[in-house]
Image 1 (cartoon, helix red, strand yellow):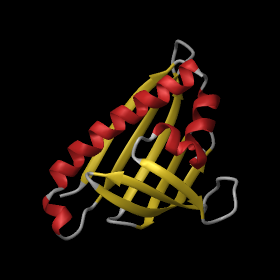
Image 2: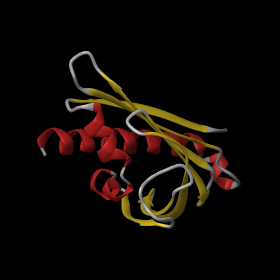
Image 3: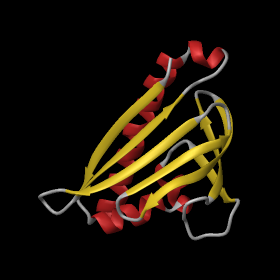
Length: 146
């Protein structure tokens, strides 16, 4: 069973600001509660083929995984794919203007757990959904009050 989680939030800030902040891997620990550190494996700035290693705590365990940027259209879309880690995962951010002058940001995580994790896919998907909602709420709070 595949994991496919799509969440979104409207942030009352410009698309340019929201996209620039959320696409910067260095900001991830500020708004992703489970990400504790990010290390660039390639030289910044962010571009297709950039690699970053993330250390996170999720479902009681420590996870280390490396993402590679597969697609990047600044201000519109960022697609990253895990090249190392517990299972193949793709994370996609998109940003769109709202009619009120804010930004709708979507966050999608999808992947195919392997081995025993495959059996836990429904639990994993629910946990990712809860975490993503909380993380997007934190991002909204940071950007709207900062």
